[in-house]
Length: 230
Image (cartoon, rainbow, N blue to C red; front, top):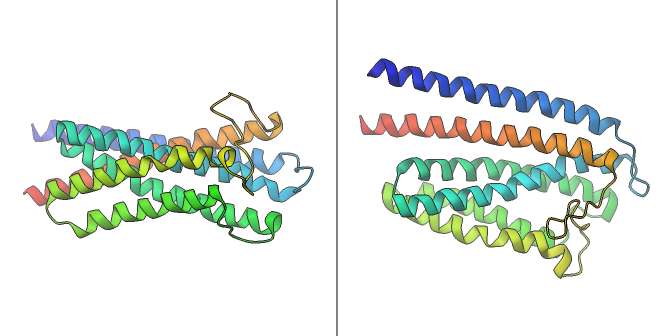
């Protein structure tokens, strides 16, 4: 029985490493294509940050919905696995959000003249980043596993409300931030194909990296939990 569990864990590790490997290769291909993309008419070569910034922001947003799903699943079914995955999703999402904010600031400086402006999109994104940080702080501050999982699930559920607000902020209010590259409410694509294709390849690569990192963090968390139970 112990041998069977060990083999299953090894298979999961191999799958995780395979996903991460594909993600790294895809990110390399996406980076090369992004560097070869034509410069923007108004922003020049600095607009190539777009190819990294947009996929990072999308993954940070999607992390919130994934955390919402696993948090609701935990509250309904009370399985520790759902809580662990929700935590892993938020932790990886926090990394992507930090990278999205950093790349956005580097893009804003030459185009807006400032690294930061409290306009609607940036403000709501900063709020989501603060929610992710709060989620991690809450988990670190509560020792009781069940209470910790319930409190963290509450933060994740409340935090997900901010995502559609942030996404629609460039439409609802006057904003320095450009409108959506792909408008999910209308299906309209607002960028040229020469720019869109490298961005989508990076989005696919970052998606694989996100899944691989969440699986890796989830496996580590499961092993930590198993050691605590011994």
